[in-house]
Length: 113
Length: 110
Image (cartoon, rainbow over all chains, first blue to last red; front, side, top):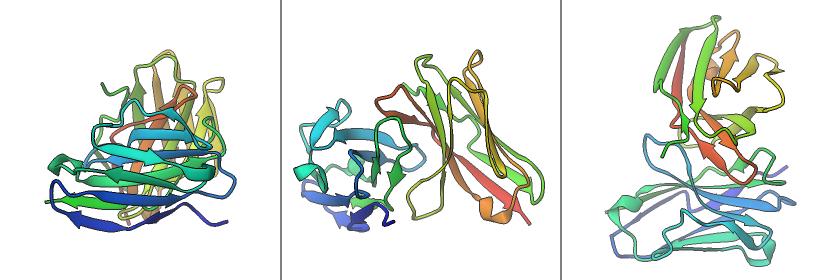
């Protein structure tokens, strides 16, 4: 079974630039999550989708972050404009439902300089 | 507001001995708990979970204990192996989203 795919693995951008991350979840998984993990901290949920609808985006900085999940499968997370404090690993995860374990991708390490 | 806490940033254990990783939570509405293991440059991988209706769940060398009255869970690894060296995150859920602790870095010394 293929796992959660994310790209790119690494990205370096200057502050005020924009960046986009892509995620392809495990086939058949209805729930998709985007997490932000800052160095030394645990993953923090940014947004959760159930199929192509948003379940929770309460911790998403909506003035600069946006995410979509078209057709209930792939998802993209965008940051525009980026700030220095956005430097983190962005993890995508998927699960069959919100009460089952989530499977994580390898993450995208973003460095904002 | 850290609802899930792992107060030990690191732990070192001799190979063959027991590793005990601890996790505390504050939200009494959490009813599903998980442990994840993370190697460098990889995403977290699911290890073991427990529902709040149980107080113990075992899977091979890994056992998770839940003490609801103390709002505490622990992961026991017996016997510890060098390949277990990784960062371990506990997570808790109310059924909507998962809240993660800050992780404990386990080093198993050969």
